[in-house]
Image (cartoon, rainbow, N blue to C red; front, side, top):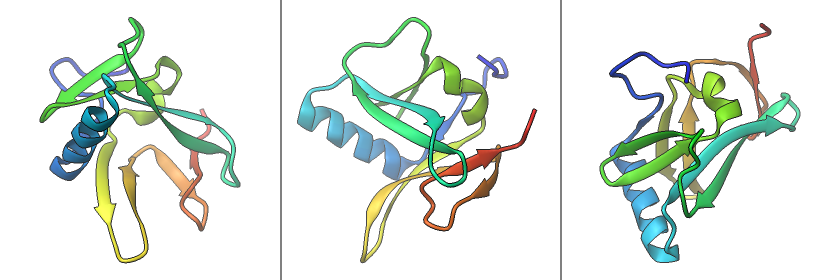
Length: 116
């Protein structure tokens, strides 16, 4: 992992943790795996999948009872990200406040990271 010893790779707000715990209990899953994949108008998209067991290569983040696993190929892109859960009149969902993103599309569904 591209982390700092003693510091979690991502942080989870209390709202996001509560929603993750609620979803995992409802559907009987172990946790939520987050990652990134190529796609969207900005070039990359976040992925979220239910998981029933932690993969040995995943980075595991546990906070307030919520378990989030970071897929190996996404770890360098997600370090420092805050995962939040927002509810509005029109929509509700997880939001990624990621300091590594340099550009996002207008709809907010895809992102771009700095060129290495």
